[in-house]
Image (cartoon, rainbow, N blue to C red; front, side):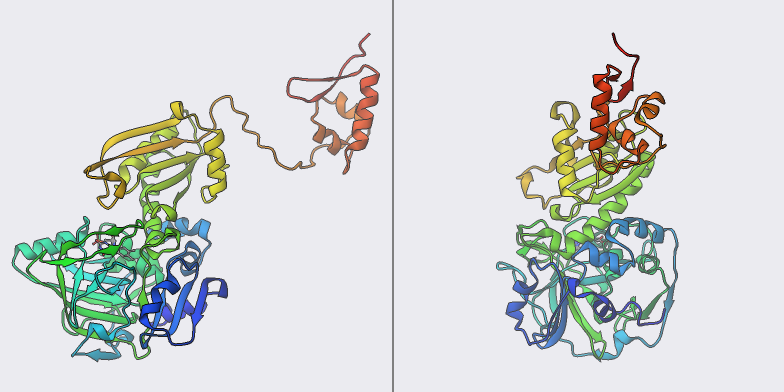
Length: 496
Ligand SMILES: Cc1cc2nc3c(=O)[nH]c(=O)nc-3n(C[C@H](O)[C@H](O)[C@H](O)COP(=O)(O)O)c2cc1C
């Protein structure tokens, strides 16, 4: 695969105009946020704050699907398939990511912009972190924002439960710094891998999701390995003081501000980058969460967890969709083929338990498209009785950032069983399809057995239908036509 196939620039070049807005004229950093907030397209600035910058790269399911060489509805299946086919990590000595090595590095020389009105400072937002977990002897990868504190210092938000938080707390417990590298400017697949929390080495996870060996290179000022085809690498460490400095406020991924938190500090020791490097920003918050990188990445990660839980709980999940407009996990839709009554509730229980962030689960039959807001609305309106089909339970571990919790530490969850209930007519009105046996007359067709109107049209090869009405009228007048309970026409004995 070499060092070109998964380059961010190459991915941007592959995007059709419907997915990409190119901005050729120079843009001041102060104007960047407004240009990608709520933008349905990826934005590629030729010059923003003096450098090349890409934003919103993973902020749509269609772009994620392009990255995986598939379509939005088949994205989860493709990710699950790749997860079953592990790929290796290979070390290289010469890396594009190290074409330029800055040993007197300066964070304020990078094109880092203020993202939301009340943010504490400009934030680096698409920063993938690489650390070693000594206890498990694996590389841990995540995405963590960096709040600029100066030329060589940034705040890191490490409040939420994560592997990195545990690794860092262990280092602080030993009184040690934690070496860390932040990669900025990556292929969307690398961001998908970084967002997942699966056991094992996460460099290998990047390779596996890429479907190709991952070339890595050793950092210049620490022992960490990072993707050799990245755009920028910030090398450094989190200091041994632990949670020591204020970080925030910040426009969070649920569409509200998070407060000032006490968080660790990152110290920069080197910056390496490509000669023609592209910096990258991720959208986190805003009015339309479905157009943020965070929600789209969260959604895919949630879908993998939910799918795996459903495979155990019910045999036939058909589709899973975590809605990005809910932040990518709070509202989850599942379609399944219910074999015995009650399976929809089993699915609800399984999804409640498999992810902290899931709050609401909607279960539908396979005829309902989980990607369609309109079809979900219809199923909720027509297949659901609140008293009977709503499952509510409380006291669950909750996502502390959820503003609706107030001061509560645990939260509640609701499941909506929107499947067809026994006795409901599962046939759905749709345009007629003309198929079945031909007969030489309407009487012959009816003599063969009761028939729906469409079958009578098919029987006579009619593409109109009105002549069938006229013939039926004649038969009715002769006293030989009846209807059965389902509405089929029946050829009866002449009534006297
Ligand atoms: C764009 C983006 C930014 C993120 N920023 C943070 C962050 O600042 N702090 C955090 O704890 N998690 C953040 N996350 C979530 C973590 O990256 C995610 O939970 C990851 O799986 C954690 O990895 P780990 O458990 O292997 O350490 C972010 C996710 C995305 C997609």
